[in-house]
Amino acid sequence: MPEPLKFTYDINGENFASAGEASMQIKKELRSLGFAPETIRRVSIAMYEGEINMVIHAGGGVAEVLVCPEKIEITLTDHGPGIPDIDLAMQEGYSTAPDAIRSIGFGAGMGLPNMKKYTDEMIIESEVQKGTKVFMRVDVK
Amino acid sequence: MTVNELASALKLRVVTMPEPDTVVEGGYAGDLLSWVMGNATQGCAWMTIMTNRNIVAVAQLIDMACVIITEGSDIPEDVVQLAEKQGINILATDQPTYETCVRVSSLI
Ligand SMILES: Nc1ncnc2c1ncn2[C@@H]1O[C@H](COP(=O)(O)OP(=O)(O)OP(=O)(O)O)[C@@H](O)[C@H]1O
Ligand SMILES: [Mg+2]
Image (cartoon, rainbow over all chains, first blue to last red):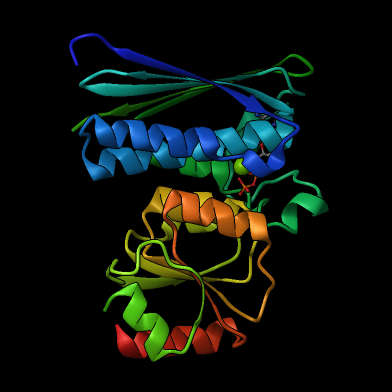
């Protein structure tokens, strides 16, 4: 893999049922590229949580994954409502998920903490009523 | 023990079993998906009452051995098809989660 590989996915905010498909796809790509299971696990968990957040909280968005031999970078961009208080959103257990979403198993308020836990770097930029951009980097060890 | 052996030993209903020879290496119980995502381990049997499509993504991303749907929850047909496509084993039982965990634990 001499050149970095770039994968781009449109995450549909309407079709809640398909949420997670981009992450499942990336997992397969990384596996066929021969990355270690632990690296794949970290990337897939982080990307899944971000993908789901875009669907639940932001009406969808775009996921871009840059795969290099030494690192994998995930950038999630949406034009949803934005996150007014990022420190608060990062706290374990904090969630604004509505009841309908909770009833199918989301809303533990663990998504962002998981993303932080499983990546080497995570940067959130968000502007209320404009949208949110989440950058994550996983180093290949 | 393989998923297939676990299913017959515990008389679990086989909803779909595309990978019957996967070895069960542990167990995890929970219904909050991102909690499960952050804490369940590879190769586990996952006991949950959740039956929507997102359980397939969680099981696939964690490399779980199987999902065991407890408490007799109904599993929609599209979820079964997605699991088949993604190679995810789904078993089911009418028993509650706790009893199922105890029985799984006695075998693995
Ligand atoms: N892309 C986003 N756009 C707008 N708000 C977001 C976005 N991502 C997260 N949030 C806000 O941050 C909160 C915490 O997110 P987090 O992923 O930790 O928990 P959750 O999605 O509510 O529940 P869980 O991930 O456990 O199912 C959300 O409830 C929501 O208010
Ligand atoms: Mg979340």
